[in-house]
Length: 134
Image (tube, rainbow, N blue to C red; front, top):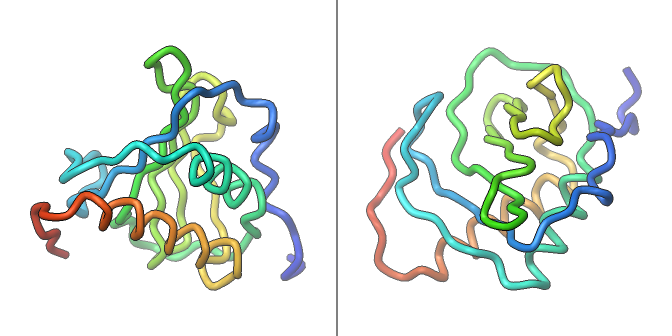
């Protein structure tokens, strides 16, 4: 597979949303959110843009995501993904997610690192929060 192969999350630019929420997760596969933050409009657009630019990679064998991103329309999740930068996995869900439910991406790519930084900055903006383990 080419290093430049786009992950091609279908139609990211066409998903209708009025809110983007980033969750910090506790390291379990179906985790409870430790905390969550709504993105400011500019950060929301940037999160969607960066998701659309993620590059495909080889899959590893763990899944301890640190963050979950949800695109909401009228308070309903229309697209969600739990992302693991350690194993290059994304679990995809919601009515506008691809039916396969999983994708692998290059966590070291510039868009992936920028998305990780955006998630960290969004959650850090909450101030005091529970610490995650794992």
